[in-house]
Image (tube, rainbow, N blue to C red; front, side, top):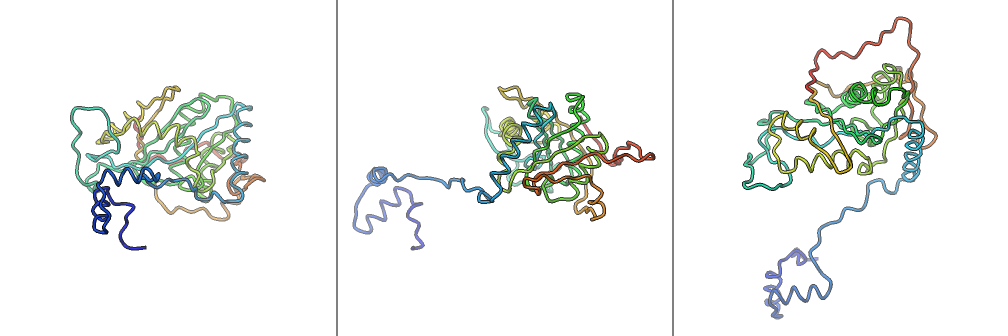
Length: 315
């Protein structure tokens, strides 16, 4: 293959090159001949999923549906969770367009040093109630931050909506802060949800490369992106307003709050601490599916929340 990429050339360029080779043809003629041969300009098409050949992929999707059905029949909450794309807050371009008379003028370059901050929106989508909850962090996207967002959702919405529920199903991606590998994620679920509220928490992770099937992606994050498309997120209040204003024809409503707290990366959980968890892997794809149950409370134990001294929540 030569260095010249003919397939990317314009009709005018193709016409000129053909003339140089002794084949005179005007640009319209070149276009007509290409269409006759069923050629047209096409972009790459994303269809090959990472992990699509994993031997347990189909079994995992079947197990997820079985867990969802079992929790529905038991009238237990089902939530889908993930971290949305992290955006810079400031006078920066936001992808998309909208109807207006004059385009909004923003900075040419997106330098983090000129930003008000960097948002970390963690979303919780309630499948049964079609409600979204977004906690916008200002620090790192860590397993502790992810679980505390779920805890905040339970305290503000879940406990009231599911007053008699003793269990919870969490659908999450296989990687990231709520992935199947981080020990801190499981440890925090045990402490913040199971032990604190007496909940039995079942977690099902989607296989690698299958995050698009996670309901939070298209039922919550998709509508949010459409709602603020083309609008610069200049302040935290602006971002929260767009989040809270997100709706769909199916009745989606969204609650959002700003969570100003510092989270450190690199936290670890020892083997001894892991052994103390009441964690039960499922028989089907045990790496992706497990249930955490409340631990017996010692007589001296108190239902004390985690240290919130460095946290500030703005509803």
